[in-house]
Length: 329
Image (tube, helix red, strand yellow):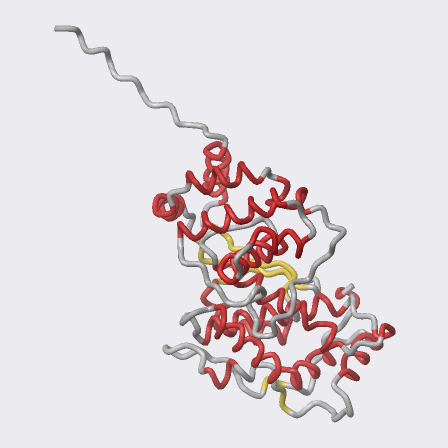
């Protein structure tokens, strides 16, 4: 557990301070946020830092690893943005994805087993891809219940645009029946009717590597968190995206503060704007964030809105006051 680890960075500071200007964080700094001053101790192989982190239960060695791995991580994120993000690249977005990757790398550190023979950089490769895809999933105007479903929808979209028989290809790839493949195709078509669908390769990366696949999964059970596919399709057909956006904007609850909970046990609340400006300094002082919560101005109002949304999803309609009967003429 990460709670058992220390993160003692005494004697080290970020080489490039993150001080956002009116124009945002400069790209040069965003690509060097893991660089340390002074340089970490020299090792023959950066994997030695990971082994030291596990052995000594001190995550400063994880920071030493990031110092050397940052260039490679930057390259992967840039490639991902280049093939999957259209023209939507900006420094803040790059940095947000990068920090998401770091969190994933940290979480998976506990599961790394050196005895299996793979170095940490090799072991973490698919999980970094997952972190980038999960970030991209959060940007979509449509939603799914899990990263697994998101990958499968993207896979069907790629097959639909690049093969002549997407249904059969999908069925063979995921070892599922044709009926389920047909339902995924319906979902993809429904999404395309609502918004443009970014089409790159199946996985959103230049490598062309296959999506992680476990043939022991029951895809019928996991599809949309157990909801029957035909019900999902009917929901897509009824969805009016413009109306949905307007309704969400109307009922949105404003927030100014965020509540941060760290693996070290520290927990505090601060203004969102302050967090945006000081997130790197916060990371170096307190370590990785375990939980991030946006704090509404009114908890009672948030509860009211959520309750109303649940009722609306069950097709509840508010009662309208009936006016007095108009006398017949």
